[in-house]
Image: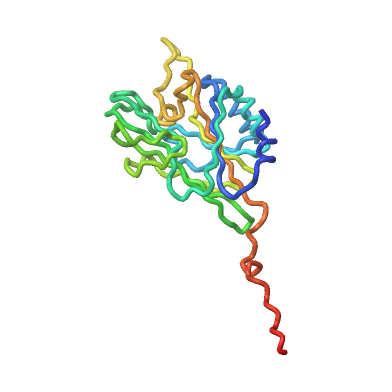
Length: 249
């Protein structure tokens, strides 16, 4: 799958394009892959820690290397692309209902509680900077009591206006030709000195980005800023041409 070639060939407009990959759920293999790519500077971890306590891992890379990243993750049987454009209001990109008393890891602590609807949403827009163009992106996670109707699907629907904010809002500025990748930080069982290996409880990111169609796979979200090649036509060129002076007989 030649993502870089598709990116270059697609019509360019200012806004944000999103992709959803479905990749294997081998946490140890994913952790090894990410660590190696960070060490080689193929990936750059985002320093903002706003969603880290909820289990999210955010990183950036040159968008021409998306094929290499997807290949390193083992490819995908399903790839979804969506054009968001300029997103002033919150859009839902992942939702999940977690039953009551489900163990979850939040900020490194295991907790259980009532049933909850968790929602990951984002918004973003292009903007001028001193260095040129960039794209501001913001991500948040909210929790609410589950409802039987009106739930956003997590695929670009308007986000719910209800719910309690978990953690802080992740705010990033993404330059041109750069992809932002958001995934659940892969956690795996560490060998124990005695007894069986124990897998830590799932994080909020784990349950939000667990693929519902392929139970043994997880989702990776990719966000690409797009910038128009040309500026709009100046308004002065849209004015009607000056009429010739009337001829006096």
